[in-house]
Image (cartoon, rainbow, N blue to C red):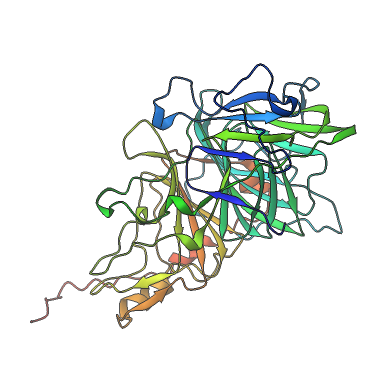
Length: 443
């Protein structure tokens, strides 16, 4: 993995050639009668041909063999990956999960695809409108097989263990406190280096983009230059025993065989690529006077709906920062929301619930389900001396926020056996401080 190279920028028009084949990109056109080095030209479209130019996504891949050369797809078991949002009855309660179990490598080998588990979601892949949230727990690399999501984009958040992702565009190493996005239709394989765990936000029908900055100005939050895209890398490798392409299509898994590696792209150009981002590069905005600002100021990426300001999903982080607000209850406020809030913890301790919410676990506060600081947090912060302090030092929590009312799967509620049924008790000690004789203090 040493020495991996990247190109910088978000949504740029990139071009890349494997240095072993200089001049592999055709000059002045996309589909010459004969491509350099005898390659095949193949376009990967991430948007309709007629989308407005700012939203038009496509890349041209120049490969040793085209991806159409494969045996027929057949249905294979999905394991705990699902799009069935009606397995169990809805549950409007505050939900919290203890850290999801990672299979021991001494017991059973589980790769990235076999280790996918759907926690919750909503919408429909057929109508191209929806969201799913998964966790991956694995201990083995993918050998002679790759994954292709025909339904939507994967935003992958490693929590335990780095991963090496080989794509048709090149290789990316992604560590905890980094994220990557593998967009719809891109084939990739995942290598791991021990027991590995992370979270996945999947969106159907929209691609992630940077949020608008409005009055913030031209700079801030996740800056475009900090996003990294892989450079071209290929292998011309025959696989006599068969290479397996796993295709997630309409919520099901299908597999086909071919006798060569799909990572045979010698050169490519375009603006539809996988990419990664290091969360430490996020330029944090925060309140410097009074009150607790809304968490939307921590949005890294958003997948928009057709309604202005309303997202299929936002990816939001809670990074280390300064808290300086005067006359203010500084932790997150008590809240009922028209959005669904799924939270995970990469490392550290989340400020509003320092106990119980653990790295590798999760919580879900559904639409209009009340939530907020636990009793200990409230008591501590209503009496604390308000001086400048570091918040979330050594911590990285995140939120997948969605306008969809998400259903929890049977695996999430029952099978995983990680649901913390005592979660509601963290609010039980909250008591009334109401004083009908209160008078404003004299100034």
